Length: 223
Image 1 (cartoon, one colour):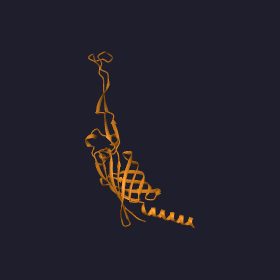
Image 2 (cartoon, one colour):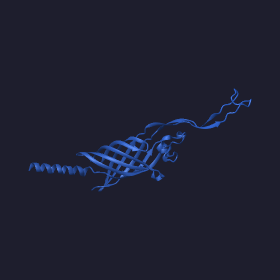
Image 3 (cartoon, one colour):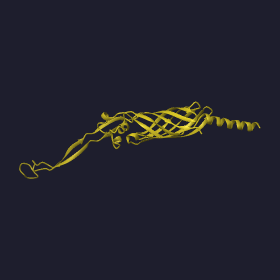
């Protein structure tokens, strides 16, 4: 009998934990600020997608920060339930730039913890057009009746890099001609040669992949 009571008590405790700490899986929308970078310059329409990795010679003059909307979905699973705290694994897929006619996808995989009070923190890798980075996030779940409204703030630090381009040349073939004596094969002949014409000089530019500061809001009904 005591064993049965213990099992029932543990089961009720598990239900209590699940009732306290909700799963917040669901849609996400928000805004992100991207500091001056190839990605933000593309978002502003000052850099072509093909030039994001090759760069342009006037990059330092056109690079500016940008703000854009975010829309996506958060998937999550839980582990190590422990009373008032539970471990969480989040997969967050977001798309930015749609209001500007651009498509900037990103995917984050984050591991962290969520408390019964609604506070959470997590970190993990982030994949976007600017490459792979680390994302750090904190959040809080606001409740209104059976509606969960999770608000999350995330930061992805930028990384330094360089892009360079070799000089571009055109070549003009110049025919030789005989010297003053009008005959080939004498010392005063001018040989044929290729004239090298510089079209664009070589350059190397240091850049930052862009730090990202985002805030997203979600919606989730208590089951």
